Image (cartoon, rainbow, N blue to C red):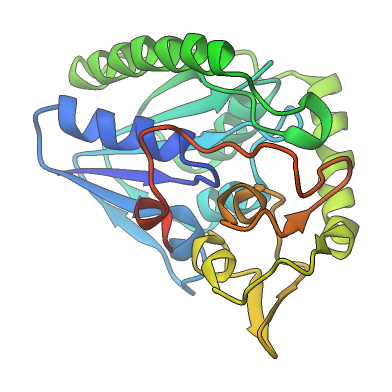
Length: 254
């Protein structure tokens, strides 16, 4: 049994997780890290464990770090893959350091390029860019599956001071970011934002979404809202949104 734990807001990482599950040829279970991390106790027994998550500001999402710290891994093999836009930074190094402190089995760390989807800074991805990056993601995901089948191992540099600095700043910013989401009048109270939030940071009160400090800033609510009613920073109602072209809202539901 291979257990694949993923964290995904716009579907990039979920797409790779599903592809890897289909290509490894073994019995696989897909598990949402956002939901699993909220358990009081996490004991993982499997022949192999795979962690898939995106890079956020040169680091791993806070919820992923909390999950790996809390989990008890009873497995001889762990692989971690980061999906990334511009750069993975120290997103693998952060998880590698945690695993080193608690796991003595074989490990592998890999990168999977994907569409850069942080619209407030990088803007909306164009059609040609999406096609180019999804092709890159497919090739890298195929290679990741081969690495798992062959149980490859490797070592990575865990000394990433600049990435660690940026990641810490981002983590501190999360304490404020949730307050800066803007809700437009076009919101029709459909509740989809609450359902797709991977960490249960959104609740519907009085027919309107309310954001909490549990927010990981994954941008899932912004990109899945059918009315483009949730905005942040430079994003406006008319700003094109993004999600992986082969992932639907029903796939991402918590």
